Amino acid sequence: MFLSIDFEDFSHDLKRELGVWDTGPLRVDALWRSYETIATFLQDHGGPSGCTATFFCTGVVAEKAPDLVAHIAKQGHEIACHYHYHDSMDRQSAATIEQMLAWAKDSLEQAANTSVRGFRAPKFRLNRNTPEHYKLIERYFDYDSSSFFGSADECQQFSNSMTLSELQLIPLFSGKYKGSGPQIRLGGTYLKLAPDTVARDLITQAKSTGVVPHVYLHPYEAVDHGKFWVPRNDLKKLGIGKATYWAARQNQWLRFGGARLIRKLARLIPPEGLSGRLDQLLLDK
Ligand SMILES: [Zn+2]
Image (cartoon, rainbow, N blue to C red; front, side, top):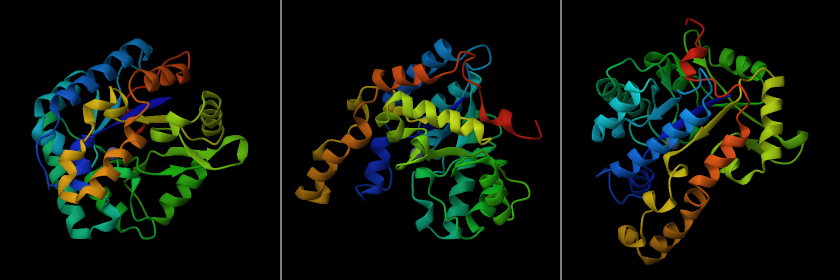
């Protein structure tokens, strides 16, 4: 089983999404704390080859906390790209996307002092109706891990339909518990809410359909929820009603993080430990 981390600053990104600012200071201390928690977890549960993982970092983290990205890379983890800002790409023009991809890759490579080969779209949002987005990603990266599939065959068919020749897709699995009910993903809010039996069933299903099991995590899920919380006062520009709504809405993402989710993840790791960096799955390696 692989573990990847969407390494982003929730508080910065929420303010950008809500129009409070274009960009501003990051909570660098909270990012360091969450990295240290994740690193300790990887040491304790990584198994012989699994004490490394892939960190999909936003470019803005590399720009504003370059020492942290350099440190993560030096520890042997893979630095991959999570776009420059945590924006929804499906609402942007091709020109903006290309500019953001190039900017993010450059910022990350400069900070990490290594080449960046993998990409994951913020919120997994890409336009899947035409090959346009995938072709842009293919120009800059060797693999994309932005999509959920129910089997390796489904992933291959999709890759063919996007006419991808160079870009390798490293899928995440989504499926239904025991074949019925809602579609569930292995990570994020789904992982937080689903009982262990559901997560285990999905891992088994992934394996049986040829998808390498893979769980994803965010920094705000590794530390106490207050660390990335945006208080109502910071949102007052939105007006009292919206500020109150968004201060409360953060519960969905920020609650049940910290020790509880980390403990849950530990219970799902197979006896042989985690599998390491995602770039190990690249066919040319
Ligand atoms: Zn993200």
